Length: 223
Image (tube, rainbow, N blue to C red; front, side, top):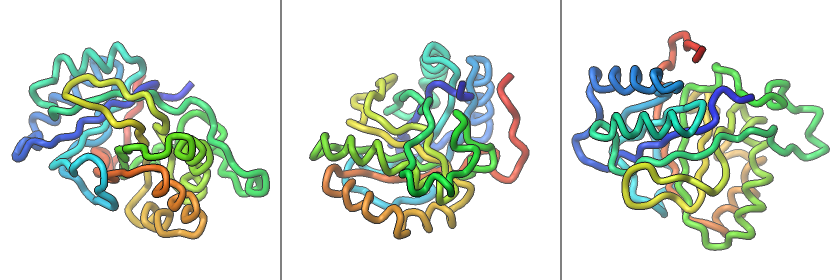
């Protein structure tokens, strides 16, 4: 089973509301008390596309073992979270790889949880769909390029649940990367290029990232 069953995203659109250090500590403690972990929180680190939801001032990503824990965390921490907060189910099955590429498949991709070394930078993509059928085909087939380039796909399907705010994305992707360089090489690379073109034909998106809280330090495991 994957370490987390659900991920919670806070899209912090309020100016001047980035949680201070003590507030981050409280959010992290509250997440841990609800069988979760605050993986990332802070100013938006990078923006690569901005055609859908406006870019927020800050972003938070948390993982939880069950949806009840996610909802309890948001209910208890609502005043410190952004006005738009939603949850989405984690990927639970290995991603699809083309048959001709299976010899290059990384060993960990056959397991339900990526290595902690991949979790240095979180990328969140908010989608508005213009061609749902073509987008579903894209979503089913691009993820191997992320793993081949050194990243991990954590969330990648429609079905986000609104926990606080006014709307959720029509589709959502959450990826993790060890660093900026790996993510940028993938985004500009030849393997992803045809899938990116397909995505542009099928959707509009806002792509943003945030640094992991534990970047550069040993990570603890949820017991």
